[in-house]
Structure formats: structure tokens, C-alpha cells
Image (cartoon, rainbow, N blue to C red; front, side, top):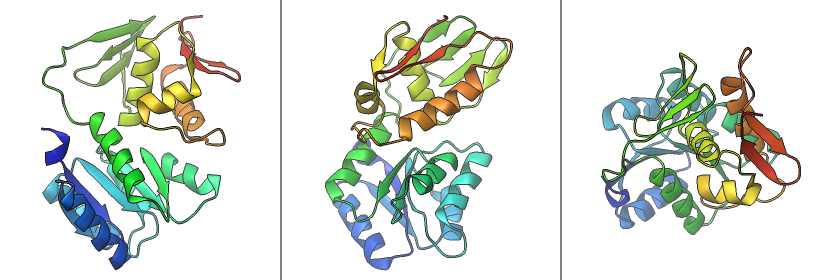
Length: 231
């Protein structure tokens, strides 16, 4: 599958926003399904199996944060781009804590939304030409093709963004990756110096990978970025 044939679920209770997104994404060549509330979005997830979800935070019946939490509790790793009219950092972090892969504040430019969707799809859709590769660092193993991670004999559940970030760090183990480099490689754009996105995801990875009894692997280089190394 390639990006032009990807299926996108748009869930937004604002009719004008929802219909505009459906029209624009359809013109871009995507297959699009739409929901006007969270309950309908969850129903469509089961029948339509989208490749990416565009999910508004504030919706009736079931809100976007709850939809995202339900998906992650069900081990559904579909990428979620959260739309929010809220601009406070705490509200954006709440979306990431719920399991969203990215967020976009309203109002937004269509070009930016399309760019973020392309970035999510690049990390999601399989590349049949990509060879299988197993990365290792100390007792950490990453199967890139199967998108599975182990620390010693324990398999670790990771979201798509968590996996991509960990894989990037381990692929470049011993190298300090700057914040801007990581943003570009993982999200396809730089959120800017005030963004907490990267720090939030580094925290997620550390809690899962740097567990008790194992050597810490994810290190902060203050003022520069992050690196993966044994010591």
C-alpha cells in the first residue's frame, strides 16, 4: 500500500470542519470515512480499519481523549492526529498521554495537516522493499520489520511514535541527536523550542526501557538533545 491509497478516519462534531476535511482529503486521493462523535468513530474503527485517524478532542457522547485511550487499551496502534482548540501545553500533553501520536491546534492550515498526515503514514505503511533488521544495544533488541521490542526476555508494548523514536536513537547509538533532528526525522517538522512533545515521549520510552535491574540507555544531553548508549 502507498500513501495515496491510505484510508483516513475523520472524527469531528463540527460539520463544516468535518466536511471540509473529507472533501480536501478526498481530493488528495485518500479514501475517507467520517464520524460526528466519538462513539461513531469507535464503531467505524472496527468496520473500516483506517490507516490513520484525525480526531477532534471536544466531541459529544465520547470525547477524543477517551476514544484514543480506548484504542490504546485495545492495543490498537493506529496513528492518531489530535485536533484541539485548546492551546495550553497541559491540554496538548493530555492528548499525548492518551496515546495520540501528534496534535494540531485549531485553526490550522490545510497544508500543515496534510504534511503531518504524510509524516504519520510514512511511519505506518509497510515498505515491501525494506529488509528485516534487528537492532541491539546492551539487552535491548528491536525487530524493525515486526516493530517489536524486548529488554532481556521481556517484550515491551510501544506506540508507533515511541517505537520510531527508540529505533532512531538506537540506530544512531553513541551519537547525540539534536532536538531539531529528531523532530524532523520523527514528525517531519520542528514544533519549536517551547514544545514539550519530545520530552514527553522520551519520558514514555525511559519508563518502558530503562527499568530496574537494567542499565539506563536513554540519556539527555542538556541544551542539545538525546542519545542512546550503555553508559
